[in-house]
Length: 292
Ligand SMILES: [Ca+2]
Image 1 (cartoon, protein in one colour):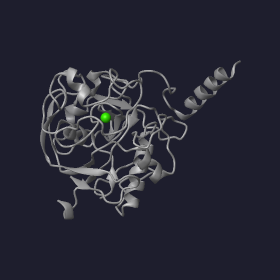
Image 2 (cartoon, helix red, strand yellow):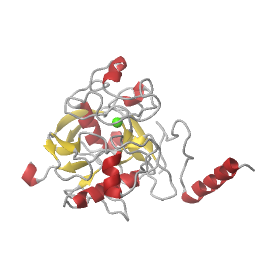
Image 3 (cartoon, protein in one colour):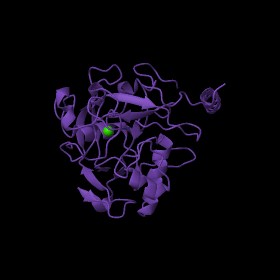
C-alpha cells in the first residue's frame, strides 16, 4: 500500500469518526442545494492591519433570487450594523490567533481553510482585543446578538449589505459579463484566492462581496427557511447541520456570485474536520447607543 493510499484510508477513518461529511480537496463541495438539509468608521485597534468597518444603514429590501428553489424573494428589514470592508486577512487572523491555516499564503490574502468554528473563535478574540463583549459561547456555539463584539453576519445582513440598495442579480446589474470588474471567480482568478480589496467595491464600499471566497454567515442553512422567516432581522433556523456561506468564490462560476445565491457547508465544530480554501469571512458588530 503506498503512503498516499494509507493516508486516504486514515483520513476516511478520521472523517467517519468525527461525522465530517467529506474529504478535503474534492472539487465542488457536496453541500446540498435545493433539498432539505437534515436536520465609514475605522476600527482603531484591530489585530493586524487596521480594518475599516462600514456603517450599514438599516432598511428594507427584497431578499432572495427567483431563479433559485431555496431563495424565494420576500421582504426583510435589517437594523443598522457595522461590517468589515474587506475579508479578514491572513495577517489579521495570524496576529490575533497565532496561526495561519491558509493554503495560499500572503498577508493581504484573505484567510481561508477556516471552518465556521474558527471564524467565530476569531470574532471572540477580536472582540477581546478591542475591549468589546464577545458574542459567541464557544461551548454551545450560540451567538448573543446583544453583545457589542464581533460576530458573523446573518444571512439577511450579508445579502442586504451585498445588494447595497440594488435589486438586480448582482450589485452592479444583471450582466455577469461585468463581474470581472468586481470580483474574482473561475474565469479570472487564475486558480487561487486573491489579495483583498483589488476589485471595485459595491455602492456601500464593501470589497470582494462577489467571489474570492465564500463568506461564512452566522445562520444555519434551512432550505425552506424563507417560507417562514420573520420579516425583521431574521437570524436563521434554530438548528441545522450546515451553516450558510454566501457570495461565491475563486473557483466557482459567475452564477454562484449572484447576490441572492445560497450555499451551505458543515461548520466543522470538531478539530478533525477540515477547512477548505474556498471559505473565508468578514465580521460585523452591532451599532450601539454611542454609535447609533
Ligand atoms: Ca466574497
